[in-house]
Length: 357
Image (cartoon, rainbow, N blue to C red; front, side, top):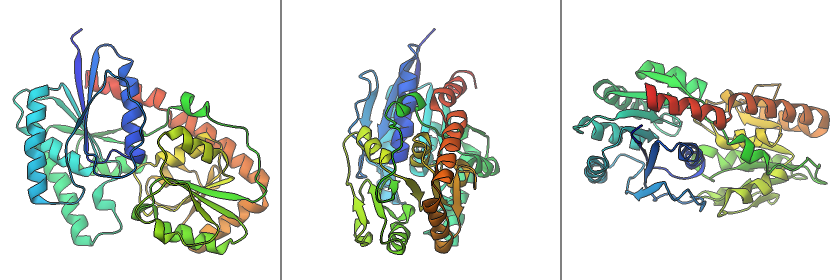
């Protein structure tokens, strides 16, 4: 069998998207009939310094997150040259900017690859932009989908619902490398002071202001933000500890083991890897009732989904006073993660799409 050339292209190569591409690349590396190249932008802070197999080629290409016609044109020209040189059989694009530029480039390739696009949270679902901008982003998604021969790979059930409105699509859920991650799990030991934690970048989508407000509501509890980011100054409550960035994901797992309750205060998500990791570590979840979170967490079964600050505090208090509920939610979340969000299973399905679609 001739080797299949797979190219991943991403503007963001940090946190959840990084974990997705890394885990998928590790699965691809097991297939001796595939070669794997990752084209990425390194402009965002917080990329983990985890070694990838030497067989995976890493190529850096500047891209910016927001629309910038000059920067986007330069990125387009450079990306087109790279793809013409590589001549890929499969191009898999990640997040909106790479999704648009990559699909546009593939239109101009003589040898047409199979093109897949995973939004990891559509831009038009962001809550920090105007209705006009949301409409513009949706229109761009629809337009590029119409004139490029591409398929959307939704990473979560709600994202799949929106993807079907845009074009050809199918669902392969986000997940975690279940066998690897559970090897870092330690049996739960309740802290003397209940610890409530979140894992990820301290950025606007993660809503650190709400995390801080909740911490102020529970001054006798310990709050832990596992990670770092540009909005750390929003975390002013005296009972919040910020770990800062760490070089390897295993360091984050050490902190995650010490959490009694996991909270996700996001304004929007694709399908959050951090929540899945917390479920694999048997943590009860309290999460905002937004796309992504509600695809992972089953309300009143593996955790609680809240719609506002008061609900968040109510559910946290309910978990604080009842250890049995925390244990039940943790165990059910573990089983749900193993069944639906296991990359060892899901990414094999995705590779079949690469080969046979």
